[in-house]
Amino acid sequence: MEVIFKTYSWFPLIFVFGTIVSIIALILIPFLLMSIKRRQKELISSIEELIVSAESIIIKASPLLDAGAEALQNSKECPDCKKLIDGAYGDCPFCNHKFSKKYYVNIIGPGDEVTLNKAAQKLAQLLKIDFHEIKHRLRMGFDYAILDRSKRMELMSGLEKMGCTVKEVVKWV
Ligand SMILES: [Zn+2]
Image: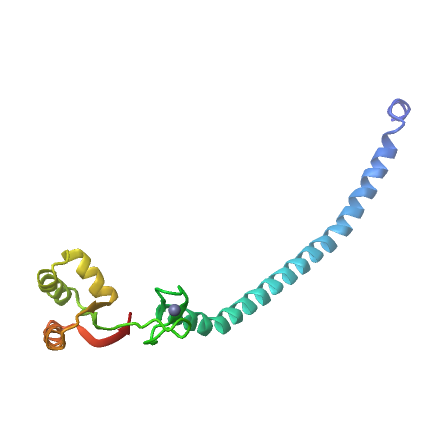
């Protein structure tokens, strides 16, 4: 023993130092863990707050976005002054350009696949449009320009018989 202590005189020092460091570490670890957990909780609650506020922003903004999209959809560009104006104008409010009235039939295809296919087949022949193209348009709903009133009425009743939903649309273009 004595020989060991003589040869390695630093050994007890290392041993004592190591023990002290270990004890300190053992005391500190639970505190460290607690503070990490607290930080995590704070982080989670702040993320939750962020999500809630983002949701409320989206909820508040969505009617505005809808209104904006609708306004853009119903607007048109004046061919003379290039200003974007409401689609309902007969005369441009900026340069007085006269628009002409154009009549459309808004067509939405039947919901079920079999009737939709039949309607698309008939319309593809009638309007001379590719079957897949017309089927896609029927699914999405589209405006078909048709000036003659009696032809328009005829087309509308024919479309209704095919199971489509139709309505007359007037646009100033
Ligand atoms: Zn104009």
